[in-house]
Image (cartoon, rainbow, N blue to C red; front, side, top):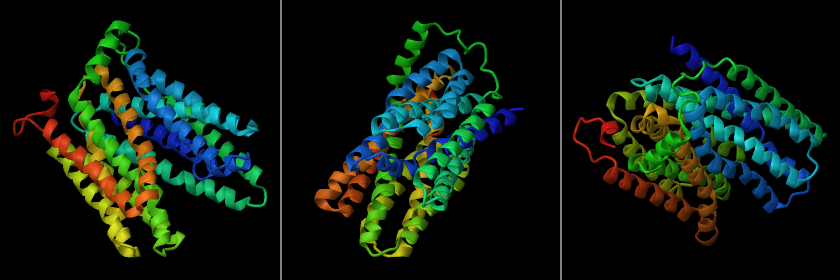
Amino acid sequence: MRSSPFILLCTTGLFAIFSSTISKSPILPMFASHLGADPSGIGMVASVSAFTGIIASIPAGMLSDRVGRKRMLIFSAIVFSTAPFLYLIVSNIWQLAVIRFYHGLATAIFIPVSMAMVSDLFHTERGEKIGWFSTATLAGRFMAPVIGGSIIGAMVFNPLLSYKTVYLVCGVSGIITMAFALRLPKTAKKQAGSMPLRETLKSFREVITARGILITSAVEASILFAYGTFETFLPLYSINAGLSAYEIGIFLSAQVITLALAKPVMGRFSDRHGRQPQIFTGAIIGAICIGSFAFFKTFFPLLILSILFGLSLSIVTSATSAFIADLSRKETHGAAMGILGSIMDIGHTTGPLVSGIVAYYFGYGVSFSGSALVLVTAAIVFRLSVMRQKKGASGAKQF
């Protein structure tokens, strides 16, 4: 049955993303500081894994089209299960940066390849199943900082021991990831290793020049640009407005919970009612939400906006991945998801950077408005370029 390998993949994703997240949140800046890093060094270390995602996602997706999904997922699981133990022998910031680059390969490979596998398994329910898979990974992402922070808090009088304990937990989760990855179904023979290199490169050119795939990826990058601004600067904006750290935690948690709960629902909605209108509508809602933060400084309005922004994220991202799968052939799902992963990482990484510069010169309010402008622009370009199709026609047949 289809549900069995899918549930196995979701479980693998939960432990994989838990392992990835607990290695950096909240421990990474603390551990880097313990090693003697200054703020610039901490920023450098924090950005290394994102850089890995940008450069490795596309090759990982292409390789999965050529050698098979399971082989690539097992390779990522090897990294998940070995990288955490390297943190235990780190003695300086440069060693930490190298390990972060190596560890970043795990997520850079796992996300696009697993999304391609979900796309391979399902067609009519593709949006809903991608939504459920994303919810599983979000569960891991949500639990990791809580558990990691609790370990550090419980061992506050021995920071080094707390850091090593967190990375041991990270390693155990990586080993569990490997155990589940080994049980994943084998890739179909017609995919695994049978595609000539020339055909692989031809398929990649086909995907990288597909306007619909690139523009849809740009919309996801834009909303993640806004999300990067939200998660980085809403806490600082709220503190300046006189709100407590507890209240800020509620904002961030409410946004993540809304995103996780709504993803499968929004994915199913896109299966039944079309992906393109949903992507455009979600992007506009997201732009309104991120732009509106500048006009409120009290708890309840900011909480409502955080929930609505989480909803807009689920509306967009539950449809974009499925739409990109619709626009590509099964033999190129890996490359297509790799392109999506690389472009969305660019958006998520540049959001805090660009908005930070804007906030420094013009204030947090302008940085929120700037993110809204980026998202509105992407939504309009998407509507003009991708949604040119006859009413009721399939988007996958148009591009």
